[in-house]
Image 1: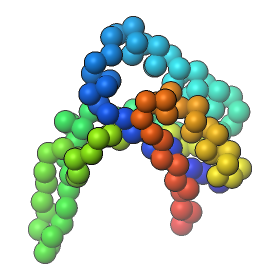
Image 2: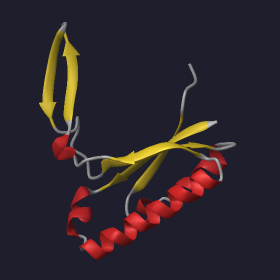
Image 3: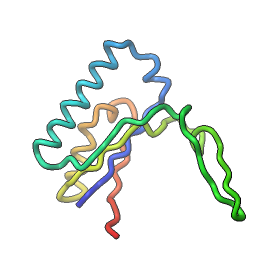
Length: 115
């Protein structure tokens, strides 16, 4: 079954990190990605640009409305994602716990609906 691991963290924490600290985190992500690929669990994934680059789209009464930024103010912002293959939710949760940001933010695990 496929799961999406949605990676949330406070962008302000990332902005406060030194380049060396950011490099260490990126290295950990690279190691995780390589392991997921080697074990056949990696389907896809990418980091996202900061929320300041986001545009939210709504259609109300047939009219398109756009606003800059995310749709809601929250303490944690969506910063990236993995799509993985896991035998069940327990395995997906175990893999989510290996995402470096799980130590400082949160990882939402969601099954992907097959249509």
